[in-house]
Image 1 (tube, rainbow, N blue to C red):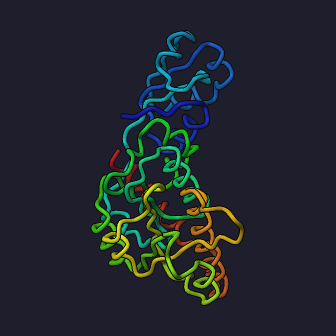
Image 2: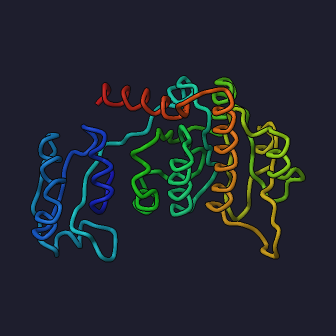
Length: 267
């Protein structure tokens, strides 16, 4: 079980029936978010009215918003993500900072990625700060927890994805691949620890290692910013290719629909 703090996180959790098991609300929040309380009760979640003092003890934020949900784990097996034929995915290798990891998850969701793998020694996706930083995106796309980078690379490559590693010291630049039309193929992006990047043995697993170009005088981009640039470059290229071939629906939407259905059956 893990906590989803705040009405927005609770609302997103309720989007997958069976995930939210308990809801704690203060008196003012119960009135203000009556729709969430009613929806939680309709889904069979236990609703508990608590005082502000109790909420302050339960919550991990400095200023709780009066609503806190207890949720079942929702991660999926690596094989399930690979079997859904994703077009865009993310592998996090040794990403320890929960704020960065949650923001990358949120960005992957916004860019239409089909899933995020928290590999090796990466932070737990259910870390409270990671959940908050994802701004509800944890409930929107499949998350794989605990797989190794080699296993993730093999599974996604077996599903037809090209593996690109982001590294600020790489000789090839992202705009070079974009100009050459090499970002429209199914792609899994590999991102490493912000402080020390990707170890050589992990970078060697990728089909190519790419740097986000720095045009100004900044020393580097942080992990979340670099991930956003890479993911949107791939998303734009893939959508342009889909329009050119007459596709009307992003493949990642079909992937999530399939995985969501399977998760609901399990629950």
